[in-house]
Length: 122
Length: 122
DNA sequence: CGGAATCCGGAGGGATACTG
DNA sequence: CAGTATCCCTCCGGATTCCG
Image (cartoon, rainbow over all chains, first blue to last red; front, side, top):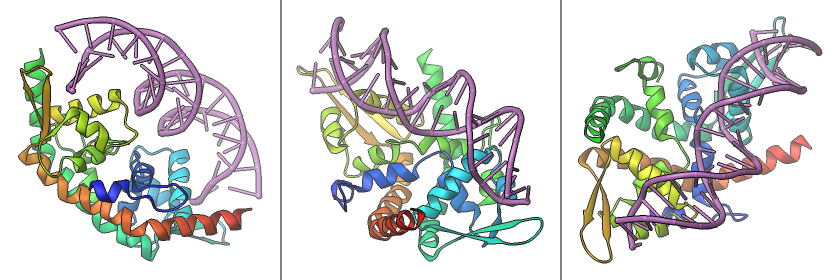
């Protein structure tokens, strides 16, 4: 891990910057919700409960810029816009899902640890 | 992924909250740096370049509360404090490293995609 | 050495209103 | 429907200083 993260890639960027860039509140979640294929904007908003329009738009734009998600808009009325993972984006799916699965499986232990920690603190 | 994240666990918490909780700037990085075993506070600070004392302390405390990291302090002069992953913490190592490895392998493509995106935007 | 405490600027991110 | 634009405020996180 030390080797991975100290490695400088291009233009002064390191893996740390990239990790930081993707480790925000919504990114992994949105990627995970695109697991099955193309999803419309509104549907995506439903699948990620709690996300605001602003953050969904910003997150999608960031992912699009990073080449992880592609956007397709159809000239219809009403407008339809679909997002899907690119080939590169799909390679992120495995780590993202592994992380989510871990969180799901470990949640009980984590919450128990917190309860114990807090009870001792007081 | 939808199923994973919509599942409510305890006390109104969902996997999303947990994912959000661990998806900050430093957490995964610190966990990764504890890969090899016990590490002292100062050494840890060196291994995570750019982290401030404040954030290292806060991150370690959070991880300790979540039962992912254990802290051992030795009554010596000068003081020595070692941190290591707990058994639960080690189960997070695989997803965390997978994510870091992905970032490392994909960094070139991502930076290229950004350059392309930015060149088209202007 | 390994923190704790305080201060503080700025980014992150929600709510709302408006547009094509 | 799928955004964009603005306002506004929380709190993340860096810098600095002090303590056992």
